[in-house]
Length: 411
Image (cartoon, rainbow, N blue to C red; front, side, top):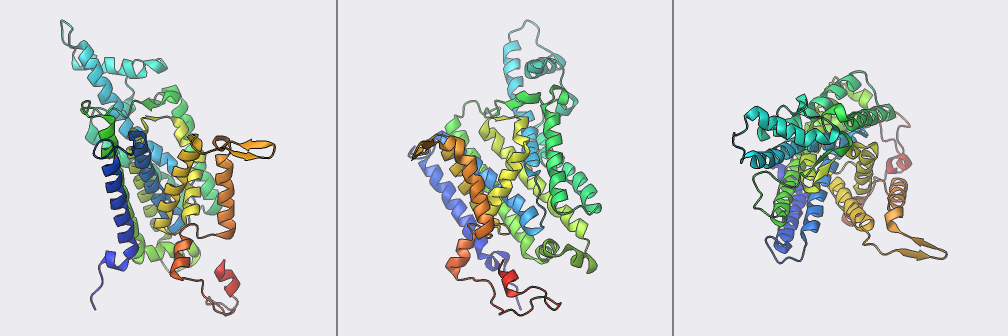
């Protein structure tokens, strides 16, 4: 019996990839750089950043939806990826400017003098004139690209190994991930952290060596890169959860103790997914912040990771396309409401300004989805396809008498 190819076994992957390709092509043809100009450059950047957030949501769904780890520290890896690529962007850009200003000197500057001038230009704002040790590889794009995945991956490996070997689970593990994020943010806020403290890294939208390329063109290029990363990340995640590995991590999510008794190395499976999700999230961050133009420690605030969990829950936890839908819908609505484009809602005696009330509406939608639609937006596809909960008329669903009854199975 010949086994069907992976994509034929999972037609939803083809649908997602096809829609992503069609979306990218449509935006390109409507952009100011390559098309009719109906979509302004600012909107193209918003769409590109939205694709990066969707990739981070896919990683979050791997950890939470398939392994059952509610990680409230995913945006720490997202920001670390941005910081790693931001170091090269800021250093190379500053080096170009400083070298041009020193080119007319009677005596050309030595490499050491050039490096000191660059360091003074970057860190003068925090009262320093020396290049920190953590910037030792900032001059190399190759090295920084490696660090984009290496630094978050090593942090996830160390944290996960310590947490999982201690068998920390549930809400305690969520609190630990949030504490890790908060500690990292507080460290980055310090001026002596080597990352310019509260000032963060700025000017990231200016790509070194591409001064002649306008922002309209760069925004489309980053859109392509973000779409390619999302497509590859989605394909990898779908392949990972479709085979035996996916069955094991789902079993860990549902009954970790039983899987451990069956002889599976539970901690190893959890650690692999946790580290892989951290690397995917970091890649998303490395593509996001050059489009945003700036990154600072506020991006690591624990609330950002909570937002990510809310997106996944609203889209549909445990379904990769649900994570994409949730991230895209909520992030675009957030840009619309907080950007002042949503009309105010006039109520008797009070006017609702969505800039102030958007977070309240988001929190309320999360509560309503959790209570009345636990499958999220993606549950609509089940309804349209006629997929309903099993009707077993009160019969036992587990190996033990009185295990799960019909009412519990529907929950």
